[in-house]
Amino acid sequence: MTDTAEIIDVSPRDGLQNEATLLSTDTKVELITRLAVAGVKKLEATSFVHPDAVPAMADAEQVMASVPRDRGVSYIGLVLNRRGLERAIAAGCDEVNYAVVVTDTFSQRNQGTTSDEGIDVWKDIARGARAAGIRPSLVVSTAFGCPFEGEVPVGRVVEVVEACLEEPPDRLSLADTIGVAVPTDVTERFEAVMPSIPEAVQLGTHFHNTRGTGLANVVAALDMGIRSFDASLGGLGGCPFAPNATGNIVTEDLAYLLGRMGIDTGLDLEALASTAEWIKQDLPDSVVGLYHRAGPFP
Ligand code: ZN
Image 1 (cartoon, rainbow, N blue to C red):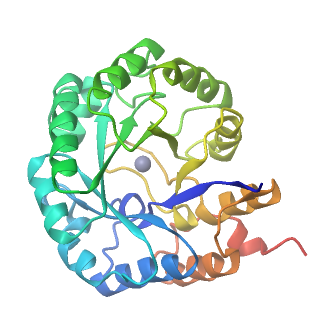
Image 2 (image 1 turned 45 degrees about the vertical axis):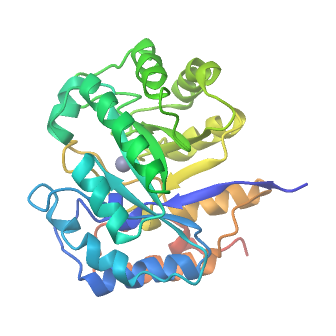
Image 3 (image 1 turned 90 degrees about the horizontal axis):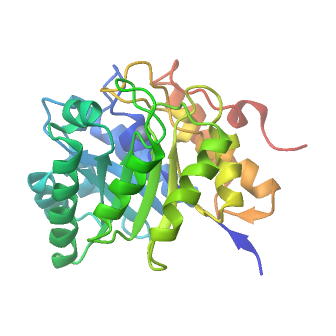
């Protein structure tokens, strides 16, 4: 039996939302199409947040109206409230992601609720999504550290996860929103939450590579049995509400790592690398991945 893992590309959302350069809707759709051609089966296409808060995502509906539907891709929309959920449903998303934040300061700045209020919003969104026949997933943000409050107690992460599990998500990802985690943190935090996670809930990670520890953290998660990883083409990204956060771990670098470890991702590395080169024309300073420059193992 081959070992497999899924890479969820989040570059069209987490990658582009922080870019000073606003890409056209056509360029976003081409990015998504190229990712689909490269074999990406799940991707975070956009977010349904207020355009004043995140101007780069103002064309969420237009993007979703033009994404390719013939490649078996599951399209995820990020939503932070009921209004966003309704927009994502109307736009034809297959899945919605909600981010619950474990620290109050970040939660207030990112989405205008306390952490506990965010748990209630999650439950409402999960119920609404299921009623509409789409999958709700949950990202547990600042699970490894907060830009405003610093260290985040493991116990608080467990408390938030357990409260959210009253409405179990399809997938639950622990997010290192600001890229402070190291592999021992990954082991510690997944060990702490795993006993509470029902079998039907897939576990995943959302790592940023702000301090160069992202792929090492993936290896720690692999050792814990996790096989779902968010990543961003070229390492695009950051967070408009997290000072100095840089991009997600790099989709093509991660696909290389997993492939050489004998774990099949179904991704075409050369197609990813050429897409990284292509998006570099618009975002020359933001593509930080290494694989697209180095190329395959000769
Ligand atoms: Zn992120």
